[in-house]
Structure formats: C-alpha cells, structure tokens
Image (cartoon, rainbow, N blue to C red; front, side, top):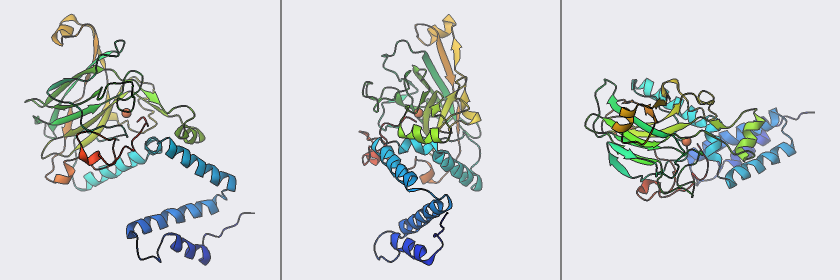
Length: 326
Ligand SMILES: [Fe+2]
C-alpha cells in the first residue's frame, strides 16, 4: 500500500519549519528556494513511494559525488549547463541581442592567468611528440562582419590522452592554455596539438548515475574558448571536431551545429614551410562573431567558483573545479 502524506497540514507545517520560515535570521531567497526544493523532493518520495533503501543509496551517492568532486561533471551530464545556456539564449533573444557565434557550456576546467600573446601563440610544450600538430586560427568580427582588432581570445583544451594541465599534475603549468589578443585584422592563430575526446571514468559516481539512465559519459574532441572585446558581449563557447564518434552524441550536451569544425589535414610542403612546421598537420579554422552591447556586465564572463589561479583574484576563493573532465 502506498501512503500519501505530502498534502497533510502536518507535513506542510513541517516544511515551513524545515525551511526556517519561523526564524528571523537567514536569507529570504534561500528560504524560498529550499522550501520549494525540499517540498518537491518530499512529494517525489510520496509519489514514487521511494523506499528506505533507495533513499539512503541516494544519500550515499551524493556523498561519493562530493568526495570525488564530481558535481561539476554531473551538472553538464544532467543538462543543467545546457539549460542555463538555453535561458541565456532566450534572454538575449528577448533583448534583441541576436546574431553572433552561439554560446555553449564552459565546463569546470578553465584556469585564469594563462600566458598572453599578441596574434600568435604556441600552446603545447612539445611533450606529446606523437600527437597531431594542430594549426588553430580564425578571425574575430562583430555581427556586421567588421574585424575586432585586439579581441581577447582565451583558449584551453586537453592533450591526446584527454587530460588538462593544472588538473593533471604530469603536465607543465598552463600547457595548452593561452590568451591570444587578436591582431590588427582581428585574427588569432595558435599552434597546438589535436585534443582527444574522453569519457567519465568507469565506475565513478557520475558514471553510476548515467548508467542508471542507460546513458554513456563520452565527449567528442573539443576546444574551449572565452572571447571578449570592449563594446561586445562576452562569449563562452567551444568547438567540437567533426568526425568524432561523439560529435553529435556529447554526454555534456555542448555540441551545437554551428560549432562543429572540421580539422583539415594538410600535407602540402609549401603550407608546411609557411608555418615553419616539420611535417603534415591539421588546420582548424574557427571564426567568431560577437554581438554588440553597451552593458558593462555583459562584456565580462560571469562569476563562478573556478580553479585557483595566480593572476585572477576573482577566482582565488575556490579550487572547487577539481578533477572533473568537461
Ligand atoms: Fe573540456
């Protein structure tokens, strides 16, 4: 027999007590949100007749997620990051800030304070000699097609084993993390290596959740970007490389049609010589268009706890990004 007690005055009064409605202190918004959240969960327990075993398994799983700092991984896996992007898209559409390169999720692995360069940077430290050389380039423009000289292009990506510097202690500091200021024609260029796709570790708490949904935890090869310029809306995005088995089946829901880019293999000797490379390479071209805005708060990335970095006081408070891979 299934009992239903959620709607009783006793439970409803209890919820108000739990949410601190009868207390003077605390934060009013926190009380309202927690009241709603706990109410929804109580109702869920009633509606699905959640057993004691199921409930305590869930508590144990939450502990494991926290212990392994995997909430930053579960969040995109359950679509929260993409949902927030969808809300931002809708806000932009309502404010008529249309056009420009689409945004997509940041993930938890940005590290501020990467070395800066003008126009060109080499991103990898050469310690992965078997990796394919990547020549990554593009132009930053406004939505009318006018180049934006000096635009700040921050790029980060993983190595050929799917690991990010800072979170992977075997790599040099800031390996494959650079800030490039666009040249007088709005162009940026980076020499790096083609990153690999990667997956949620087998048996990790996030994997347990995804498997219970019949889902995998794989991501295609991708490259993260922050792009900003005065008078333009800050853009957080990433490109997914075409041809990866997960390009259109990304567990983190970051893929957008306009952000799928082909890595073109180039073996022409003149092209190799022009770039002062030793052999064939893959070229990835990603042009970026930024929407215009005069609102200062839209010209910078939003605040969030990010990995601790030397040169960004905004982020000093947190190292919570931890070891998740997204
Ligand atoms: Fe990533």
